[in-house]
Image (cartoon, rainbow, N blue to C red; front, side):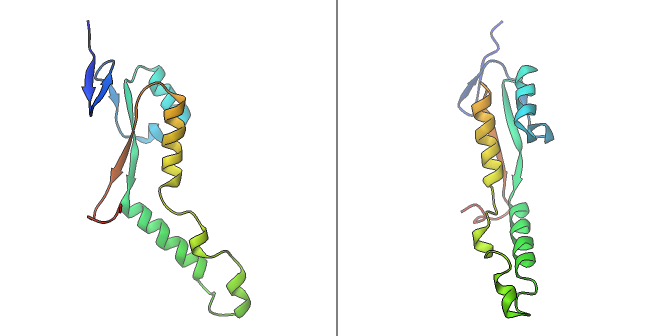
Length: 117
């Protein structure tokens, strides 16, 4: 029986897709999903508000107390020198896509019109 289907323009062997869940949090788990028969994997969601919160928290921690003593200005690198954002997510997506023969689909969740621009 031919169960091939098209999902978002991608041809899949069958319509069983592992949806967004914590199981997509590592390359080894994504390989296990492929081994279990998933025709594609949807990554766990990357939330806009999560990125905003992480960025604000890092900036607060990096700048707290720096105005107190002149020498404290050079304790840590500038906030702009740190990578805050979707880089870890995109790296996992890239590594997973290279490790399996099924589509690995990113999942972005935005709350504003300009949050991802």
